[in-house]
Length: 227
Image (cartoon, rainbow, N blue to C red; front, side, top):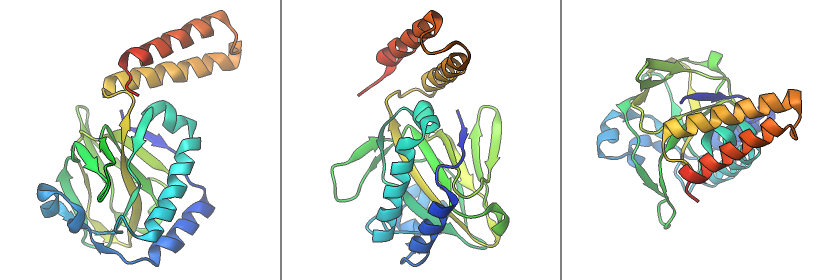
């Protein structure tokens, strides 16, 4: 399941984030890529230890913790600290798949990458190209979102960032381990949760059918989930 999550960051938060990271020291993005990805990757990236990356990353994680749509769709167990990349004219990231496991350098923090996320930090009118293209069984989906919006998609997907032809694309990207490993199961739980919330608006939370459906939701989560 791919999901567009709008307004993860406010416009003021986006402006503050750009002020901090634009002034930081960027490095060649290939330095942080795996063996295969390094040949496909042509961009700049903030080092994980860069103070600006940590400060803005903390802001993003706090915003995600408050975002009910993100929580319902991702059912996050662990989130890799957000990273940041920058693409200028001629730069791109050719088709690749994300590593199945990610470890935070210098720590024992490790996750299984069930989901990938890109949080856009550039106004889409400020650059041409740079679409995130994600492949699934229904074809290739190209994504270019307003600054502050996030796209969530299975980390198992082949994907690429298309070449920039004008301007500059800045984004945060990260991975997460979900409480529910399988994408199909997460999708069903998300659909059920969304339906329950919609019904509850009309019937109220104490409606017997709502209570029964909520019990089914939690029993399925109990069956499929890790903690």
